[in-house]
Structures are given as structure tokens and as C-alpha cells.
Length: 125
Image 1 (cartoon, rainbow, N blue to C red):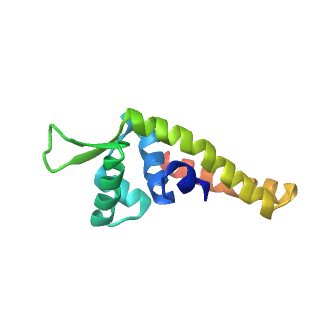
Image 2: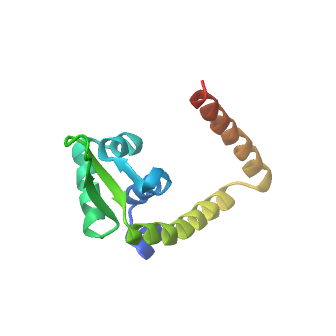
């Protein structure tokens, strides 16, 4: 996978950067990231420690609740994600084009679109 070879990111690292990129102010509570990417609290700590060593994520404390710790995407992390996103999307497109013909891709897009619509409807209830 080019994501790791070209950018030094595992798919799980990339997933965390995605979550932070789209989060308000590029920050999330560490426990919420763990739930989103399906990792234990100790697993997310290890993963975030590596991203922090890379300078892509910083740890921040909550001023109103000392028990809360935030993960914040740094400027370096923002640039890393944007560069890696191009590679990752190209890999995904290549994978789907190699496995499905145009009609199958259109059908798959329609089916997955239903999930997105159902998810959006659930949030509005």
C-alpha cells in the first residue's frame, strides 16, 4: 500500500487523521477517537503517541474538565493528511476499478448512497 510506503502512515494512523481533519477545530476527545476507530483506550494512546512523535497530532487538556484530554491535528498533521489523502484516494479508486466494471461501480455507489442517506436521516431524528 502506497499510504505507508510514501507517507509513513498505517491505515489506522490515516483513519485517525481523517477523524481529526473533519472534526470541529481539528480536535476530538481521545476517548471519542478510540470509539470512532474502534480501539481500546490503551490502543488509542499508543497510536496517538506515535502520531504525536511525528508532530502530526498534539495533546491538549480541557480547561473546564481536567479529566478530558484532546487530540489536536497540528499544521504539520494537516499537511500530512492532505498529501496522504491524494495517495489514499488514488489507491481506493485503483482497487475499485480493478475489481468492478463501470455498471458494478455505479450500482455499488447507489447502494452505499442508501447507507449515507439512512445515516443522515438517523442524525436528524
